[in-house]
Image (cartoon, rainbow, N blue to C red; front, top):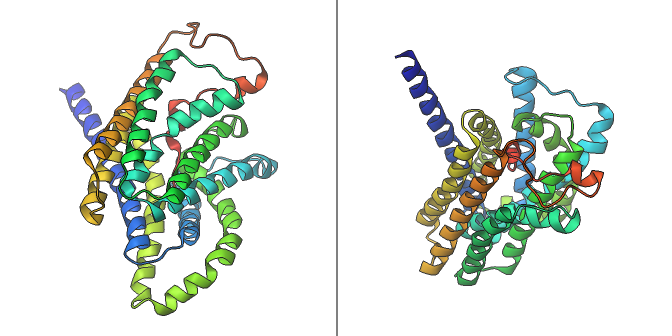
Length: 343
């Protein structure tokens, strides 16, 4: 009886973690698109700065004031040598995501973001000459095919937004790969990641945002019919962005890797459906099929990765051993790297 109760509580806890993660993730995406499209606040760098500032304050409150998470101490020298380069890539990743959201529909942007597993594998293969099991390559075929079909049939295609989303995938992959070597020895969770990286990202992006968008933001504030309620919505998006990081931490510790992978792909489908219901962006039948193929491919990729990870020690997973120490420092991203992405 007691075991059954514990099992039921575990299932309930996992479902609760997934639902709150979906809620924060989808809400952040929808509210950012609403800011760009409905509030006519077309300044992705400024939106990113708001997210970084609120996330910096939120992480400080959680770790230093409320003490809900212990601080992972980082050597001061490592903050500049290791954390700062990661923060730069982290900043570029978030900015490109917001830029793409400014120009293309949520459905298209989310589908392109699903290309990240492919860019991670291809980048490691091209740059670091790392070889992977053939099943990894086979699992990428539906992802690439689905992305191509979705891109060709997208009715609201914008080349600038498409390129921003695609380079955002490369930035995400680069950040994940670099984390293996630059953050080696530190076991960061999503909250400590934000605590260290968000302030650096604010410093990196603050000046470009003021130079490129400062005049536009002032003009928008003067001409918008109700700027203060709009600013509240913009600030709320930053608060929700930080809450998303907290929810990622919670869901990772409440679910298995396979559950997280499946839930992540279903989350994309939920975001696409809700965004279509709100913004009414046209989606053709083939476009929906391409999105579905991509999500199935991502699920299959996660399954293959999980199966390979379950092989007993000593079982060869690649055709050969790494050629040099750099390859040993940069393995294929494991399931703990899903802390990703998002301020």
